[in-house]
Amino acid sequence: MDQNVILEVKNLSLNYVTDDGTVYAVNDLNFVLHKGSTLCLVGETGAGKTSTAKAIMGILPHPQSKILSGEVLLEGEDLLKASKKRMQSVRGSKISMIFQDPMTSLNPVMRVSDQVAEVLRLHKAKSRIEAAKMAKEVLLQVGIKEDRITEYPHQFSGGMRQRVGIAMALACSPEILIADEPTTALDVTIQAQVLELMKELKKQYEMAMIMITHDLGIVADVCDYVAVMYAGSIVEYGDRRHIFTNAKHPYTIGLFGCIPDLSIEQEELIPIKGMTPDPSKKPKGCAFAPRCAYATEQCFQETPGNYEIEPGHWVRCLQFRGEDTENV
Image: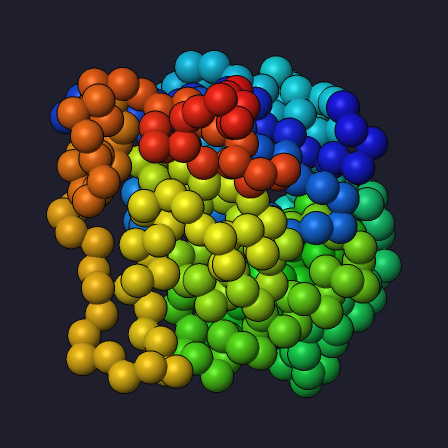
């Protein structure tokens, strides 16, 4: 493994078995996370972003979830084969996660300082006094004033609760931070404050980060690398320059078409036609073909490979298959 790579996801596929049938959540997923960098997983609801994060964290629901294949390599160690005890030590100390809704991820009957202290006692074996002192320092660092650290989650606004969630995630100085749409429930002004705080803390703690979002504005602001997901697969991958100046996959281009351009006069946005495919029905051929303006008959029959169209820029689309591309 490249010494600059801290996390590698290889050929990950997972399903959910429900009373209504099998949900194909993630299909043959591959990506790497470099030390100190930020990778964005971008896509519509149901693309498999959160399922991917939960697989990395080892918190997929049981017995509904089933990992069919793949590896999640943390510095060479396959977390999918790790014991429960090992994963308990990894979560928080090596990899932490900030969840989408801070109200449901915090314990409503515990003071916020106690919740952060609990994380420290679990992973750093501190005494109650030491853990309380460190919890206070972390909460102050994320902007929670000293006279409020003994309050309960319901006494905080959404933005302040998310700051508590960030404090819990960073308490043990993890090497990787996974942020699952951390600003979705917040208004625009608070979103900007939380994102700026996360960028500052990421730099201070020298962490790598996986940011899960559907907001391309956030991608432009915080990410180094971008993986565009659709129906459980990565359809385009590259650095920020590749995606924002040279997007190639029809789905990625469609996402940009849904964003208003303030530099030109527009009467209406250009939506992506159709709906995302039913995750319980695995489509034949390219999953995006029914919504794609460039789809041919072959697209409905043949599953596209992953083609490197320029160094570090990969597209999963048959129109880029050729002698000058490499398929993996």
